Length: 189
Image (cartoon, rainbow, N blue to C red; front, side, top):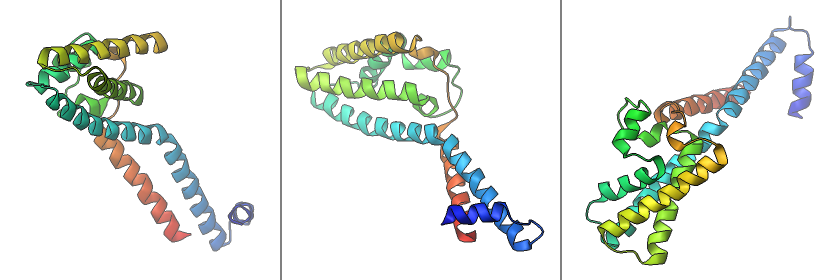
């Protein structure tokens, strides 16, 4: 078995060049596994961020069919409900200085709360047959407040106080590098 090979190599005489090479391989493999385990939460973060993108599109479609005229105002109402402030103020509050979406800097927990906010806003609109700009904004804000209250009750902190994470692009690069390291080790083994 591979494990038997590992035990044999790790306990063999390192003066043998083949043993030294095999020990280097297993040390590299262990390092790659360690890195992959450390990235587990980041992989989950990427998955949730991808789901948010899908649900933003779905919600936009439902909102449009329900009579939203200004999607930015509708979308902002959800942020106001969840964060007690509009998105531009939230960016300043969190000291977000980068370009792109603030969602790309949120941690897994905060992203999951936003995903829940989006899916439940869409459900509320569909289930209650809400129509028109103002009622849709009210629904988005109401759902945002409910999610906010749940986050505070469960975690003990308001969503705006959740720390920013590394940019999603950096996380993707790191995961790709780990994948390449595994592929490289696979070719050696």
